[in-house]
Image (cartoon, rainbow, N blue to C red):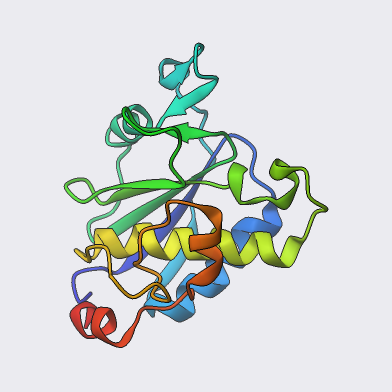
Amino acid sequence: MADIKMIEIMPLGEIENSVLEYLKENLATIFGCQIFQAEARTIPDRAFNLLRNQYQAEVIIQCLCRVKKPAGTLTLAVIDNDLYVPGLNFVFGLADRLHNICLISITRLRQSYYGLPADENVFLKRALKEAVHELGHLFNLEHCPDPRCVMHFSNTLSDTDRKDSRFCRLCQKQLS
C-alpha cells in the first residue's frame, strides 16, 4: 500500500450524498489513506445493453481509463444502475488492476430491489463491503476462501451479508 497515496470515489450519474460520505469516512479508516470525491461523470451510453436493460461493467471501466488522475491514485467508481459482464447475469462490481480502477453498482444492494422494506443501514454496509472488496483487488488480493472475509466472492446478496467489511487475518497480512 506504500505506493497508494489516495483513493478517489467517482460517482457515475446521480449517487446519494449519504452513500458517498459513508464510503469516504469508512474507506479512510480501513485503508489508512486519503479519500476524496471526484467530479461526477456521466454514464457512457455505449455501455448500455438494451436487450438486458443493464450496463456492461467492462465498457464503463474502459471509458474511465481515459480519465486523468494523479499518480498513486486508485479510482472507485459508484453507479446506481445494474451491471453485468458477459457470461454472468449480474455483478456487484468489477476491478481493473492494470488501470487502478474499480466499479461497484449499488442497485442490487438495496432491500427495495427485492421488494423488501428499505433498510438504510443494511444498504450502506453492503455498499462498503463491495467497495472494499473491489479495492482489495486493486491491491492485488484474490478471492478468499473465508466466507467472513471481505475478499470472499459474493455470488448472492446473502454472501455479501455474511462477510465482514474488513479483511481476514491472512488477507490483511498480504495487504501489508
